[in-house]
Image (cartoon, rainbow, N blue to C red; front, side, top):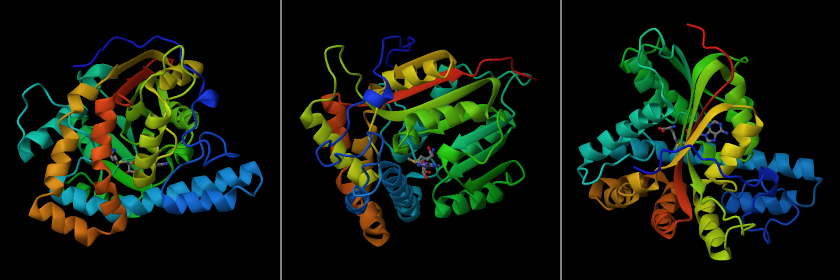
Length: 351
Ligand SMILES: C[S@@+](CC[C@H](N)C(=O)[O-])C[C@H]1O[C@@H](n2cnc3c(N)ncnc32)[C@H](O)[C@@H]1O
C-alpha cells in the first residue's frame, strides 16, 4: 500500500497551478476545461469574448461533453465491468480474473472508508450520504446497503441517472437511494445535509477544484467525513513551477479523450482543504495499488465481447479506449497519481 501518512508539504495555490497547453489556451484561466476536439473549437470561439463569458461557455461545453461521453459509454462499461466505474484496489499477487477485478473495485470502496476512518458502529455510522459523480450508482447502493443509510447520487449523465434508478429499484433500494442529474459545482442540496460526502473518481472532471471542494464541504454536516478519490498529477518539486512539457503533452492527450479540464496534484487538494478550514486532512498515493487496472481494461476491450460492444457504442467511447495506453504510460512515468484525500468538516457529529 502507498504511504498512509498525512500529507503535509506546502502546495502552490490553485491560481498558480500549471496550465495545461498554455499556448493553445492563452487568454483563458487555468481552470477552463481542456476537453475534447469539440471543446477546443468551443474555446477558440469563446476566446474572442469577455473572460467571464468565455469561461462560462467553455464550462458549458465541458459539462455537455462529459454528459455525452457517459451517456454513450456507460452501457459498454457495465456490460464488461459491472456497476463500479472506477479503478480496483489490488493487493500484491491479486487474482487477474473478471471476478478478481470486481472484487478489487469493491476493495477500493472499502479501503477508502477504512482510510477515512468511517465508523462501522451502528450508533455512529453514516445515515445520510451524498455520492457526487455517482456513475450508475455502484457506490451509492453499496454504501446504502452497508450502513443502512439513505444515499443521493448526482451525475451529469441522464442515461446514468436512469440506469442507476433502475438498478436501485431492481435491488429493492428505491426507497433509500435516489439519483438526479445535477452539477457537483452547484449541488441541489441545502447546507450541512450529509454525514458522509463521497466522490469516487469524479474530481478529475471538475473545472474548478476549489469550488468542487467547497461544495463538498457546504453539503457536509458538521463533524462529517469527506472522501475524494481522484486522478491527480504528481506533486511539484519545490524547485518546479509547472510540470515538464512532455508531461503536459501526455496529460493533454488524455484530457481530450476523457473530457477532463486541467489536472492538479494531491498537494493542491490538501492546500484547498486547509484553506477551507477542513480538519484531519489526510492523503495517500495509491498508484501502486491500482497498477493492474488499466492493463486489465485494455485486455477486456480486446475480447470479442469488449470489441463488439465498443464498435456498437460510438466514437467518444472508441476514442476513450484508444488512449487507455496513455494512462499506463502516465502511471509508469510517475506523472499520473491515483490519490485519496479525506478530511472532516469542523463541528460535532450529531447522532
Ligand atoms: C468515472 S465516473 C465515476 C462514477 C462513480 N463514482 C463510480 O465510481 O462508479 C465519473 C462520474 O463523474 C460524473 N461527473 C463529472 N463531472 C461532474 C459534475 N460537474 N457534476 C456531477 N457529476 C459529474 C460523471 O457524470 C460520472 O458519473
